[in-house]
Amino acid sequence: MSIERNLAYVVGLLLIGSIIGMFLMNSYVNDLNQEYSIEIRDEGNIKAKVIEITPWHGVIYIHLSNNRKYWIDNSRNYNYDHIFIGDNIKIGDSIIKKDNSDSLWIKSSKGEFLFVVGAWINKPKE
Image (cartoon, rainbow, N blue to C red; front, side, top):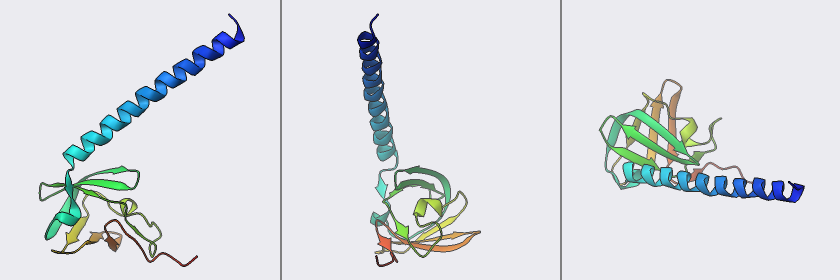
């Protein structure tokens, strides 16, 4: 076989693999969005413990002890060593949210953390 033919096979296999990978990733995200269909900003008062966490590219999917599954949009607080909300939530932590608020308080053994859902707060001036 010629080098060109081998190269064509390799490129074809990579293309097919990429298409299958994109399909599987899209299916996985769609399944997460259906299972964790509640946007946490739409909820009233919450005071519950974290049972399960699934991070996905800045979005956090969490299952809480109130038996509800939420998604939390990309949230950052630049006052912390770990600025992303997902880096500050662990199983067993408490999540507190007040009615008509988009602020989340995370209480853990590492301390208390405040995040505004979908916002980047305390970002340093460039």
